[in-house]
Length: 320
Image (cartoon, rainbow, N blue to C red; front, top):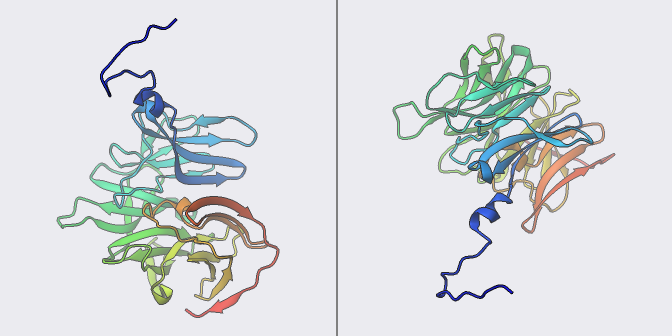
């Protein structure tokens, strides 16, 4: 028989410790990336001092860690972070929490940095295959100002550390997207005092021969002070971009025409505190022929991830 022990109120020892509880509380981060049938995501490891790890699951196989110790896949950009990694044919590009540099990790190899040292943060990248670079959001804390300078930059994938500034001048940037043929770039931007869920601007610019952006071509302000969310390019190569305004999915061509598909009474534009992480936006993949969408949305506070196949959809022209 177990001997009973007497202890003062609140001073008894329990076998259920805080460390025991935390050790089983592996948390999934909001960013999920698909590459064919493979799935990549980020999860935290309480038993490894809260390290963020990229995990890879092949179809019908067990999941395996991608990033080794001590790398911590986490960015501090915009202070909230998000959008810390990119997948390209099995090669991983990620922001490391300790130094905020961007790293490249090829399959079976160790990570190595592709950005120079310094108090600069990178996130929310996309591959520009035509020019062999990543286009991403950059937050420079080395400037002599009250606030860091935000911009969109191009980073060479060859490890030379070359960084080319592409777009600057506004307070915040997010969600760069390259057209499949490499000719145009879309992005979101906003300024104080707006938050990204208050009012944003959607821009599309031409990428010139030297890689710079001629971005005076298309500039669409938020409709009635609504906020656009993460633009996405069509993976079938049609050159269309998909944008969200509340419960509308907007399809934008390279000449600025907007077509709206009303999905249902859902909140697609979530409170994007981690504005750079595309999984917080309305969708991660489109296939135009059947309007196949992978959506993340909320209904009365409940977060839902769904895949929808729609053979046909009614549309209405939205004036830009």
